[in-house]
Amino acid sequence: MAIPIISAEEAASYINHDDTVGFSGFTPAGSVKAIPVALGERAKAMHAQGKPFKIGMITGASTGDSLDGSLARADAVKFRTPYQSNADMRNLINAGKAEYFDSHLSVVGQQIRYGFLGKINWGIIEACDVTEQGEIVLTTGVGISPTVCKYADRLLIELNAYHPKGLRGMHDLMVVADPPHRREISIYSPSDRGGAEVIKVDPAKIAGIVLTNQADEVSGFSKTDEVTDQIGRNVADFLSNELKNGGIPSSFLPLQSGVGNIANALLAALGEHPGIPDFEMYTEVIQDSVIDLMEKGRVKFASGCSLTVSPEKLAHIYSNLDFFHKRILLRPQEISNSPEVARRLGIISINTAIEVDLFGNVNSTNIMGRKMMNGIGGSGDFTRNAYISVFTCPSVAKGGKISAFVPMVSHTDHSEHSVQVVITEQGVADLRAKSPKAKMKAIIDNCVHPDYKGILREYAGLAGDTHTPCTLSAAFGMHLELEKSGDMRNINWGECFK
Image (cartoon, rainbow, N blue to C red):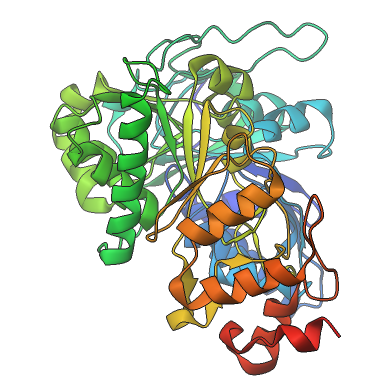
């Protein structure tokens, strides 16, 4: 049967107030663009008529501004899950105008199937090809698309001519069985395949196809600076020493790295380090530095959930698709972030912290414990199941007014039981097989900025000689001082310990 070609406005008209919509993509890669902009305009028009219009949003991870930004600015969001990074969406959430529930990315697909997220009325999916037989070829991001296509009542497709049909075969798509019938995921190396190249649906389920030609809304990465470069060198030195001392198998292990400028810098540093052999990646986001290292032969293969690269880098990939087609595989986040696969392969995970406390608990989501930044993303999926789990961050922020290291984190995403190594531009704190007091010493001696070493040693001395030195009256003293004076360095522990 012929699937109708419709406008973005017509597609948006099908979606009603209180509908729950599942979207394709993972980061702006593979995120839909035309329909959500039209949906935002529909919401504004409804609001102008005094009528309610808000939808539930389920995505793979963060998206582009055309999706998160358009719907946030239109106040069209009833709830949002599991991860976002858009300023307008963040402001909407932190103002309490949209419900937001943060979630480990690996569980979103199964939460849909279990019915935990309610009925999915619509799925909106970006594709580079759709056949009359209902075969959907995804673009640069997979996310939760296979599950959405299976469980949404109806589908709308953005057929984006910007992405070549030659992407077919670069995806490994599956929906795992649910308990009690789930079997092992048959992936034993990053390049193993266990699924299909396309998503197959009943063509009658597709309400319409919207034709587009739009690039992914991935912004370029900022240039590295001395701090991010030094963090990268410290990570590379640490892993090289682990390899040399037999802590990592001589063949090395697959790497997982988070998203952002620090992650991009540290991957570049790993590629340049003579003590690091050529390696594979089993990760969620494939960034620019991975592509550069792939062409140099340093990255042998990369399995991920999205190809989140700058526009220039994506154009380069498309110009050399035969080369990259053999070296990149994109999977649903339920597979790319699978705890089962991460533990089997022995992933070395490297993620970014907002703040770390003296015992190794990590906050990666909330500013001052109450304002959502982005979300936990996939960091928990990998950290808890890694062969070695590493967290990185600059030791200070805002010109030194904020220390990344505090007596107690204002919000806990990763507990001390999962965090093994912390690395800043100052150095490396290996927390493995250490008591809480030994962890305190390792963190202060090796990772804390010089401006804060004395401050945190004073706290440690005042906190008592218990198993876990902590004084409740002072544990958030540095946070309170920041609110009071705007600079954590002004802390007076004597006032806190009265």
